Every structure is written in C-alpha cells, then in structure tokens.
Amino acid sequence: MRSLSRRTSSTVPRASGCSTSGAGRTSGPSSKAGRRNAAAGRGRRTWRPSSAWPRRSNGPSPPERLARLARLRRRLYRGLREALGDLFVCNTPMDEGAAAPHLLNIAFPPHDGRPFDGEMLILNLDMEGIAVSSGSACTSGALTPSHVLQALGHDAATAAAAIRFSLGKDTTEEEIDRTVDAVARVVRRMLAVM
Image (cartoon, rainbow, N blue to C red; front, top):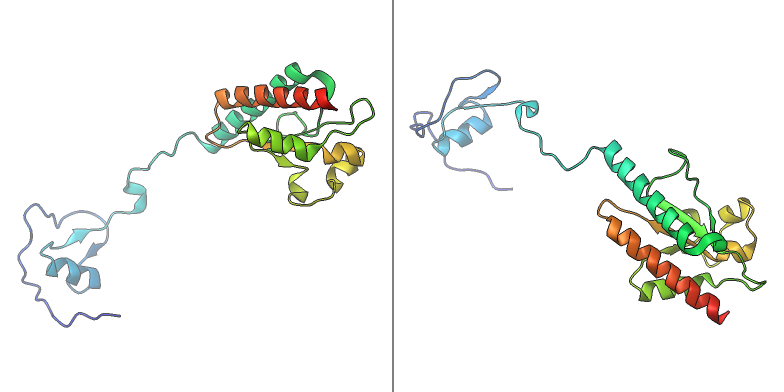
C-alpha cells in the first residue's frame, strides 16, 4: 500500500467552474476525498445520490425479453411442426408460463421400428451451423438417455433422440427460420438412409 507523504494545505486555489454550493453531503477539506480534491485543485464537490444519476437503458425490460423469447420459441415449434409433421414429439409445454421461454425440447421416436440416432442428428446439425444439446437440461453431458424424458413416458430410444434448443437475447427470427430449414433437411436426409 502506498501512502502520501506530501501534505497539502487547505488554501489551494479552486479550479474555475467548481461550485461549492448545493444540497446533500459534501466532501470538505477534513475528509480524505476533500484532501484529494484540494490537492488536485478541484475544491469542494457536492455529493449526489445514485438516484440522481441518469439510468442507462440496457434494452427491453425483463418481461418484454421473456415475451420475445416465448414468441421465438413458438415460431420455432410451429416451423418444425409444419416442416416435419408428426415425426417428432414436443417435450416442452407450450402453454404461456408453463416452461422457461427460451428452451424447446423435442424428441424423435423410432421410425418404422428403427430408432433415430440422436447423436448423429446433433453432429449433422452442427455441420449445418446449428448448435443444439441432447436430452434434457437436467442430464446434459450424460451418456445415458434422460431419466426426465423417460419419466415423461418416453421409451429409451425416443429419450436418446431428444434435442434441446436454447434461445438467447440475440436470437433473431431469421436464425429461427434458418434453424427450421436445417433441421428439416437433416431429418429428411437421415430418414432416407435409415
């Protein structure tokens, strides 16, 4: 820690334009801040409460952000439903307020008796530039099918073919539409070789 060895007198001239009047607490020459100000030639400054400072706006309010994410999730779900029909089941409740508005979890049940390869789906989507996760958020990183999805009534094959989309504050409608196109293309390609 460095200490100041030089003492300053309180008779240091004030800088022009400094005001010593005003309401609220002030930092006089006896306080540490007052001595620092006097040494710098700033004179006595008026303290303002933080509520007097203008507030910065960081965009929409939290409820507006949540509503926007819910709209994007609905757009993603509807786009996937239109493109893929009944090829997938939705594991996320779509009722307003029933689930986190930024998550959508879907699963692909076996097709014509053959299980859908969830890991291959994730790899193919990654090659298309779409980042998704497997299973449920509770079991991310696990190699076994999600016990949460199995508790929802899915068999192990369907739970193993579940993917989770996470939307963020910067997600756009164009990205949602591109995701729908990529998922539909990948799923159709995978079904063709099954």
